Length: 246
Ligand SMILES: C[S@@+](CC[C@H](N)C(=O)[O-])C[C@H]1O[C@@H](n2cnc3c(N)ncnc32)[C@H](O)[C@@H]1O
Image (cartoon, rainbow, N blue to C red; front, side):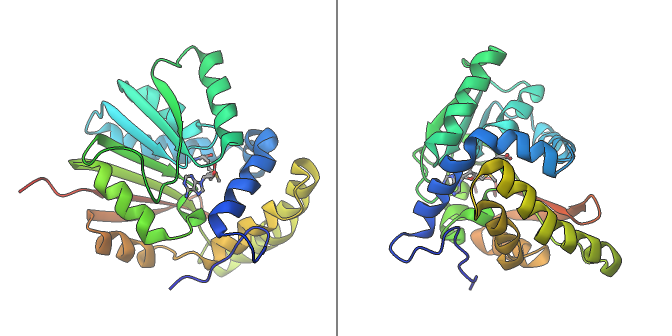
């Protein structure tokens, strides 16, 4: 059972409501802060994930917790027919739609508002699903993963990226200084949201890491579940497939 870490700790709201509110609040600064705080390395992480799903040449892709759509746009390199960016925050989706317009790809990349724990699509629809830094924010992790499994086609692929904690003591020492002090400070100044970039390290610490998350994916029903530590263990790429229909 995960400890429930919420953005604002408001007892009258669910975690989902708070997460939606927080991303609405920081949407205007999200892309800028992402690039700044990850020093642009997040691009290489998404590239690896897209390369994995690209091996099966998916035509229909769902990007869960898509936010402003970076993962969805990266998926264009593998030439899908359609990518749906799916997210609970209208604020984030607004920027995703604007980016799609500017890039002239609104006919391929579409954004749909919805909750990952109740995905608004039919069973077995998508050839591949991506989730970038989203699962940690789900209120009920297992429900979200089961929904992802349901809408993935048999034989389809899932790639999840999530921030993780380095296991090397030396790296971890400097990472903790950055992650627990510098990042919240810079995030607070630019996003003007006092909690968002403090919630980030708190939610990462409370989230199952590495093999613990692999185990959850296995229990959900996925097969060939693997994980890889990226950039000194600061990010994890989880890959999995859905069983072929028997
Ligand atoms: C850290 S952002 C990641 C955005 C994007 N995937 C990326 O790689 O930059 C997390 C996103 O997850 C979305 N999210 C959190 N919980 C969700 C849920 N239950 N259903 C749909 N989206 C959710 C948030 O609104 C937010 O846009």
